[in-house]
Amino acid sequence: MKLYIETYGCQMNVNDTEVIFSILAAEGYERTEDISEADVILANTCSVRDNAEQRIHGRIGQFALNKKARPEVLVGIVGCMAERMKENLLESGKVDIVAGPDTYRRLPELIKEASRRPQIDVTLSREETYADIVPVRTDTNGVAAFISIMRGCNNVCSYCVVPYTRGVERSRDARSIVREACDVHSKGYREVTLLGQNVDSYRWSDPVTGEDVNFARLLEMVARVNPDLRVRFATSNPQDISDEVIRTMAAYPNICRHIHLPVQSGSDRILEKMRRRYTAQWYFDRVEYIRSIIPDCGITTDVIAGFCSETEEDHRATLDLFEKVGFDAAYMFQYSERPGTIAARHYPDDVDAATKTRRLNEIIELQNRKSLENYRRDIGKTFEVLVEGPSRRSSEDLCGRTSNNKMCVFADSVHKAGDYVSVEVVDCTSATLLCRVKP
Ligand code: SAH
Ligand code: SF4
Ligand code: F3S
Image (tube, rainbow, N blue to C red):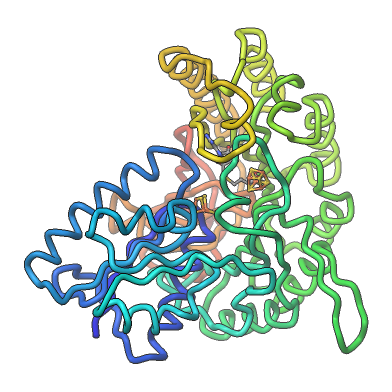
């Protein structure tokens, strides 16, 4: 049986796809990149914004053509949109399997039964962490691997669907995380990214030693796997990132100097309405503290333009904060109302589409200018880069990231993916450092 999977959404979904491959490979399924030869087509989906779901509806239409050509083909929608839409996804008759993020162990059984009638399992779990499953890495560079350290989320940011699609927060056995890091290192990987919706709330208690492992301690355990293995993590919540985590980063050179710290808004009134538990000043003070301990730390963010009741004044507060912080990069979104969330139930989505777009564009424009200024300051500096492979634009160039997560491109015919290379920055764009290899 041949299995084809498309992945949408965040890095956790990328890692979940690897878990799914692992579960189905154990049952004899073979992976294919060619959808036309697949016996089972799965889409691992995202619900975070409406446009993410619209894309999947489009794909379901496309998959139906594959079914038409070969009626025995089974189509499964798994992940966050499966969890959110449940049996509604079966109504079109184009979907055979609906499986939520905590039911992947049942996929072999669901697929088997689906040839008789459509199958659905959207049970959320309080325990499932897939700790014992060794993901089959699907990324092609063989250098950087994702490791999920927890699942679910216990925050209820009012705009966000994730707590509903992923369930309650659970931390994975720290020993299995360290084992997985050792395993990928022995296979040649040189970077791991520890994933969770709110990594600072990681908590696990060792049943043997009784030790309580928090995120700072986990970071340290993974950093000690090998000095040659870089460690990244995401996502940190501004209200929860601890001084201990920041000091642990400073103590281990192989913990990358980069924190993704989503701010969402620069207006205290909007932050409160979003149920984020910090103010703009508090956020700024965290950034200052990080920079005082780790001066070269890369800081990136997420922001939402046009949340319910956002005024021009609120929007200007966001622009001001962006101006003041000077992020290295940002993921910038327009607010998209998600059914069932606190915001959808209590606050009208009252910023009109044109205003949302204009505000988003103003943020993007400001951030592009800030990114360029920020990258320009690196010209003349030397960085150690972990080579990821050939650059996208030219096969004669290699690309790789600095510790603080900036993409570097440089001409190099000597090194290969997985090597550490010392480079000097000669020029830049707002998203790439153009470098030359140091002799
Ligand atoms: N756990 C992470 C975020 C996960 S979702 C955190 O707390 O930071 C990734 C990003 O999507 C969020 O940071 C937010 O900026 C954006 N997002 C979430 N819900 C959204 C919505 N309804 N509309 C627009 N953007 C949204
Ligand atoms: Fe969503 Fe907030 Fe949880 Fe992040 S912390 S996943 S934004 S509810
Ligand atoms: Fe990730 Fe999208 Fe789900 S961002 S957690 S795949 S809703």
